[in-house]
Image 1: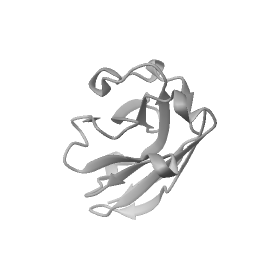
Image 2: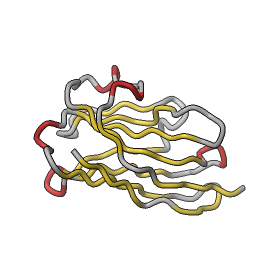
Image 3: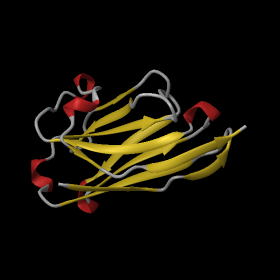
Image 4: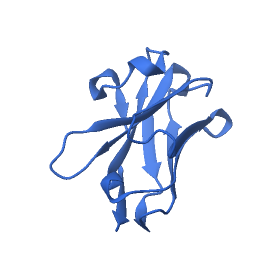
Length: 126
């Protein structure tokens, strides 16, 4: 499975961005997708997860109510709509695929994901 994340950029606090992650290769093996982020000097942290079918989602408390994760199986794409962005959302955002688990609330650790995209940078100015 190959993943390509895109859509990052510079935005003012309170603004919105939409990240996308395009999957290719053995897509049939994907059960769930996740979004993580890593700020400078910090560990990679969980942001959101979604079943590949789109029927179940899970969010970190820090983004709940502001971010929405969705999937488009026809386009083999998962998106992360981010609204009301805050400076603390500044990070490199990564998408990841899990071929084995389907309970999205249980896949919050980076080591549970087998495939990773290259990351896209999001900067939120105050």
